[in-house]
Length: 278
Ligand SMILES: Cc1cc2nc3c(=O)[nH]c(=O)nc-3n(C[C@H](O)[C@H](O)[C@H](O)COP(=O)(O)OP(=O)(O)OC[C@H]3O[C@@H](n4cnc5c(N)ncnc54)[C@H](O)[C@@H]3O)c2cc1C
Image 1 (cartoon, rainbow, N blue to C red):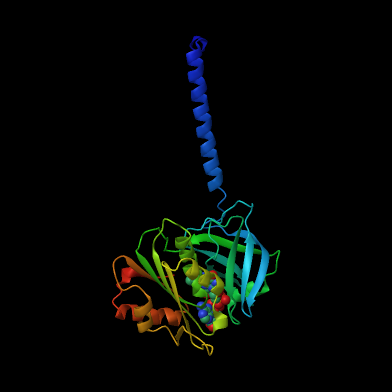
Image 2 (image 1 turned 60 degrees about the vertical axis):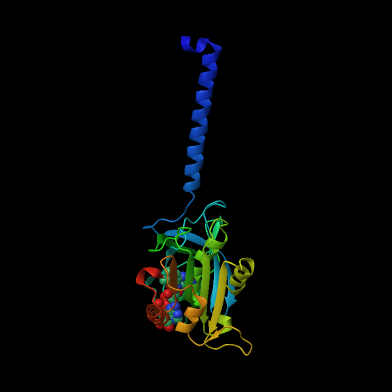
């Protein structure tokens, strides 16, 4: 150990040891942060229901705890999770859902669920009580949002099809470096059916230059300044960005609506690569 006899070499060794220690610490911190993501793409993981809030006669917000207060679900923007439950006959059923929370919301995730009287997975959610566990796997989906991938999104949502749009819109608007514009058309039967209304109106108020929303109702109340009937070609023409290579139109709604929207978009000249259906 003659090398350590001189003060210069002792300082040099000290510096090297410190640099290595900082590096190891950084790698540990980084990997432990990463390991807090909770989803597995092939394996169902169980999450405990910690809160259930009824939002209307057939819609409820379900809050699930993640393993620790700093855990994140680990869901890329634009992707969804598969939830498994039992239908009214006791048979297994698995359906896709998009949390309304992002990975910036740590320690928990939320699902806003519309429960249909005859729906198989709806039955499972209707029966769920605080303390029960939900089996979830993911991430799933062909769409993964990258900031700046387009100049503007048009979004055509119906009913519970709002949740993937809300997730993407929130991620864009809450990122100060992302200047993407979002033009959302949201269709429902009555005004009571509009999901996340307060949150959507909040986004429109807080980001007036970046986010526009146009509500459409089949059965509007007496005083109503949105659209009436089904979403038409003219409504898309007026409220969505026109076809362009740097524009994408996202669709998510009940199957008949998706079919009608695909026909409208084709007639308006949106090429297939300018469209995506969740
Ligand atoms: C990517 C993605 C994300 C989704 N995210 C959410 C979400 O966050 N919250 C949510 O509530 N749903 C969401 N959905 C819809 C969800 O996956 C189920 O389709 C829905 O919960 C109905 O499932 P079910 O098994 O209860 O009904 P099913 O057993 O499939 O259907 C039974 C009956 O319910 C009615 N029904 C079912 N779906 C619809 C519909 N969309 N519109 C009108 N009537 C319908 C019909 O009458 C149908 O005959 C999402 C779908 C996709 C593709």
